[in-house]
Image (tube, rainbow, N blue to C red; front, side, top):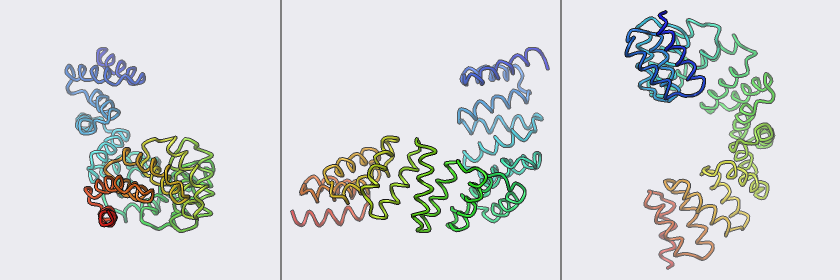
Length: 322
């Protein structure tokens, strides 16, 4: 390794450690201008572009590095991830398969491969691989968790609960595992079990709005609106752009007879995401209940313009009355 080339690689590494990616990329590009056939510099350039989420260019640089002899599992893994991000799922499968052959003991590589199988529509291969993984790495909670996500995606909720339970046995205080098992329980209509998991997930991750939203929705389904409302309030405190939480909070308030605040919440939902007609329908319906039909018509017309049938139907009834 020449001294100047080594200097480039060292400087790039230092800048990346300091998260100075723009400066690192400039150094890498300068190094490549002087050493266009240097595989290590191409890989470093690819790594920077990967971190900057410039996946098309990262793919090009990784492939240049491969042609120049930089054949290692980390490169194949990151190239596979970049290909997934670029929606090139079949190509990603090939890269993850190569990485797995090079590092057969790394279960994380195999989980990446399983994910690529799922995205490329190869569900049978994914299930076969998950079966092997759970046998080869029975003590790895993440293996069981990812298998649970796969099963849940196929609406096989009983099996998903079993997989999540195995994951939780390995890592009892992992909020993600409890949140996902709670979702599977809720899909099975087992709200008591779902609430227990969501409550524990909220305690473990009090900054996660999804857990509070899911717990609130369980109470909403039970008709316990006064239990649901503070949970939904917590969600919008944590994430002011969580459209669904505004819908849920507005619905709980409306069901509790608190129409004035429900109107304010539904109006906020239309500001957060004006592309969703449901917000305009719920706002229009609440305004109608408050006796403000002219304002209701304005909201419902916006929803109708978005192609919403419910908005059109309610709009027609109010206009007929007017």
